[in-house]
Amino acid sequence: MRLRISILLLFITCRTLAQNQPMVYEDKTYLPEIKTVQFYNTKKEGSFPLIPLNSGEQVMLSFDDLSGQSKILNYTLEHCDAQWNSSRLSPIEYLQGFTEDRLMEYRYSAGTRQKYIHYELTLPNQNLSPRLAGNYLLKVYQNGDQSKPVLTRRLYVVGSKVSITAQMVPSGNVSQRATNQKINFSLEYAGLNVQNPYTDIRTLIMQNARPETGIWNTRPANIRSTQLIYNDILTNDFPGRNEFRHFDTRSLKLNSERIGHIYRDTANTVILLPDPKRDQPDYVFQYDNDGKFFIINQDGRDGRTDGDYAHMYFTLLANKTAFDGSAYIVGQFNNYRLDEQSKLKYDGSLMRFYTDLYLKQGVYDYGYVWVDAKTKTPDDTVLEGNHFETENDYQILVYFRAPGARWEELVGYRVLNTAR
Image (tube, rainbow, N blue to C red; front, side, top):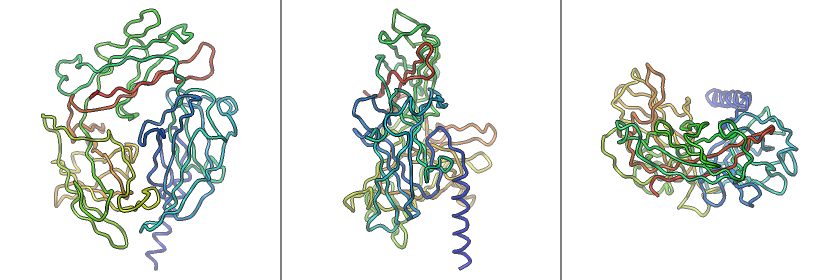
């Protein structure tokens, strides 16, 4: 009885601390009971959360609440600049319809060991839609109070006013040609009133939609009439990294690839096969989803509400110890965050790192990041390897601040795949 009371008090304490967290302008979940957050363009599940302005396209937000209690949830959008600082505009200037709305679409789970409430939201909708192009922070919060955040997600609304041409070329650094992927690109901005292309336009390139990989381009190497050319030999040179690892729990009735054992009792437990270190000199092709995850339940009809949760046990054979540094597991499923939830523990008797994550049924990509004890610098090539042959998506986003404007617009977008 005392143990149950202690667990309840611990949960309440964690929840209170989460509610007291300040809202930040990044992808983040603030409550421990909120799981499996997905945010993508409805044309393709798992896609980059970007829509053209006034195009009729929509993004879908979905998540589960494992507390089992329905909440009064509200949401709104806030316009931001290219570096995700508030534009400090009035909501009336950048929103059409209401300035906030209530999240009304939810369903209860059915036939699962873990009970939850599944929420969904599509944007733009008849009650709330963006008026301007640019970066938007989607905020979901409780009881109409933004000081009680539930989650935040970054939304990109593009007003296509520039054309982008891009290609991958060998690294300008000969010593890195076996590992790196260099991106050269050019912009045609004839449709914009640009007074100074060195200050009015800036461009961000991300690898696999990971903000921590982003490289800013503020000065083109060359200007030809209304064309900006970014091909400096030292810029936009990315580590190719490696294909993501993956596991498949679409069914909890049989062992698929990478699954060692499945135990089904009062809760589901899945033991994955040990993950070896992959810092080998030779590239080995492996199909992946560029870090994404997809919710699928082959044992049911609709994975959104009949997909179950399972304790997933990961083991990493890193040939390192806790004295050397720390290992973290990352993917789109946890927004590539390096925190206590993604940090692996170390078992000195077995000389391996391990962790337990509570995840919904589906197909997941993941990888490991190493943080050296001396440098404190995160590096995902130490444990995973680094190869120029790796298949990656690069998102190119072009931002423009018109002369005298109080906000920054997203005026161009292009995705470049290294295999196509």
